[in-house]
Image (cartoon, rainbow, N blue to C red):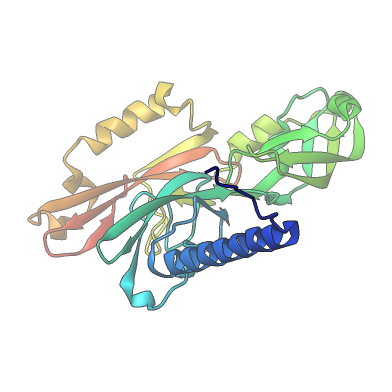
Length: 297
């Protein structure tokens, strides 16, 4: 005997409701899963950006995406990051690490420089037709992306030095990240004047390298003119200094200390305000702890 079969017609609205319900439940379950994962799994940010010159953050929340139950469970590691006294002082990309219990994850710290250089300028006087560098207008250029490159804002100002007179114009100072500052400067061009001779004849002490607060202006060798530090190696004065520094230094100190051993020697470059070398100093330390500066009488 043949059996009769029939199909119950499905209600489309019911099917749609079931599908929607399943999707909503699925989304809720995914949300709960992601929440729990964020709460209990270490999720480190791929990249954290800092401006050069700012302090690095030691707040772990700046480096991870997951929720934190107890900050004491986390340790930040910055062994590869270049900084000084917590100041990020060099543009670049570095690796940081976050340790959570027995898990360690890495991310990147990107140090950027978007700040224009801090610049101070001075007036400049040159001889008629005397060429000079635009950087000679600059007395200070502080930036985390050195060197500072100095150019004329208007190319037409490049030839001002060729004719006697007074000129006011603008220069542009850029760092190597192309951040720029613009400064107005004054140039005086005089007949019979020579900036190079003025610089070389200035034997007034301006600064030393390295600097010592107890220095008494004593020099073991004083020059008769200033020299470009990049050219000093080829001068007779430098040869003389090498002879002095390699000699028995006791002859340049008070005979009172002739029996004391010299346990430390520091060579010091002495400059005028134009950055030219005008002499050398030597700082020594005796075995009794006394520091002295040598003098060649």
